[in-house]
Each structure stands twice: as C-alpha cells, then as structure tokens.
Image 1 (cartoon, helix red, strand yellow):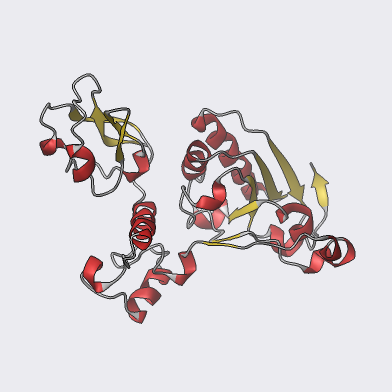
Image 2 (cartoon, one colour; image 1 turned 90 degrees about the vertical axis):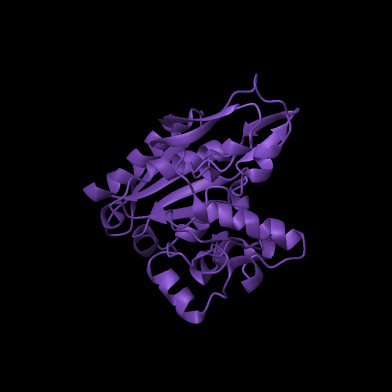
Length: 266
C-alpha cells in the first residue's frame, strides 16, 4: 500500500540514537553506527522520531510500504517486557486491566478494538504446537492426529513476524478444504504452517499480508489448497501476487479439491 512513512538519510545521521529511543514502536534500530528503519510495519507514520534528530536526517515520504501492524508492535513490546520481568498488559503499562468484557469485544471484532492486544485475546494469542512424528505415530494412525502446528491460523489474525514463520513451509488453504478433504492433516498440514481463509467471505485482498509474511521471514515453500469453486481461485491469485510483491523467488504449488472431497488437480 502507498502511505506516509519515515525516511532516514544515512549521510546526515550522526549515530546519536535519539530517534531509536524516541520510536515507541521499535521500528528504528542502530546498525553499524547508523539509524535504520528495520521494520516498515512497525512505523505508524506519526513521526515521534523527527523532532529528536539533531541533524534533520529524518523526513516523511509517501511510498509503497507495509501497512502499520499494531498487533505485531504490541506483541514485540510484550515479549520484550516479559524478558525484562514485566507484564506489558498490566495496569502499570496500559493504564487499565483488560477485562472479560474487553476480551469478548476484542474477539468479536477480530482483535481490533482499542483494548485488544495480541496476547490479550485468547483467539489471537500466538501458540506453537510440537507434534509427535515418531514412528509409532506414523502410518495408519496418522490421519487421526492433529497436525496444526500453530495458533492462530486465520490469515487475517496471524502477525506477520510470528516466530513460527521462520524457515517455514506454508500451507495456504481454503476454509472449506478441511471439511471436504478428510486426510488434510496427514497429507497437507503435516510439517507445515497452515494459514486459512475464504476470499469470498473475508472480502479482502490477502496478497498484501502474505507478501509481508514472505518478505519478513525465510519462507521455504508455499502450497495452496483450494476448492474447485470459482471464488476459491482468489486464494491462488493472492499467493501469486504476494510472491511477486515480495521480490523473492519462492517455490509454490497448487492443489484443487472437489466439492465431493477428491484431489482433482495438482
């Protein structure tokens, strides 16, 4: 998307670090004695860093950039404060406790309310599941075991910098595929990070977020699992566009499932 974002002139930067300290979102870091915008999706475009720069090395510009991801910022802050022995979601840090009512409202609108934090709403709290792939759990009993490797799995809910994306093989699947194809866990989800969505019901362009996931992480491959219905072609198109927008060469493949639950195209 095209939006307002900061630009740092490295020639003017004197390496004082004032901007990095002023950036509450953590978008700026000091590298090799220079300030650098390391996370576009952490920059909210408000410019708290601008007045702190003594050499006027920071300005605004309008350009193609990743959308500001407030959820990812809050998650990063939570993890940082947790490592420092603090609770980011305590009254001390947020000015109030997140109540049950806040959590219910947060989950109802997908975690986008002012009180919604990535770690606050159970529906979007990051989790990684270690599955047992030992020989005794392979073979005939494999289809009965869940192979979901992480939570959340909805494309709209996953943070682009979730740790489970590092070096991941992605499965981008249509919501309906899990109900139509009985062996989806063993055959497609095993050893993959699963992202699900419905282009028709969500009415959103997934390619923007998928592109950020690909750009931000070392994604090894992508498999698209779509239904034969026409509206599901939007899922494959989103992955194609995301790969192109990311500027990376990622191997990908597509598999089509019939409405009767059979693989009809690979």
